[in-house]
Length: 139
Image (tube, rainbow, N blue to C red; front, side, top):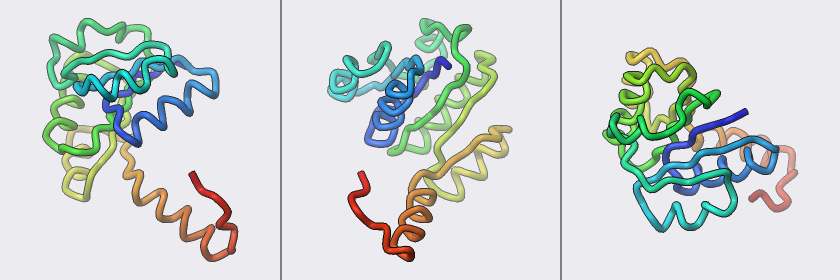
């Protein structure tokens, strides 16, 4: 599978590395040069780019990807603009990170069916581990 991940902060980078470790091709994009530098040797290819700009995204091999994952976690505005640009470019399968319930509602209104809130998911897993005393090291 070939994935585009937009946003290489803690969540996006970890996701990119995990998918790479499982044998998938990952294209990573972030506007922060430092984040791109940190991950560029661990994934297929990484770009310093403003993914909210449709013109910039057109430079990527969008026709070759199986899915795009918008993992931006610091700005609802940037996230929504990146999702809108991907939709305008007819990217078929878009997964998007929601920062809160308002963001979730807007993504749903944009017809994004695959939406995730990683903090909520992690909290449920942590609660299960806590209640079954399977804590160990969770990285």
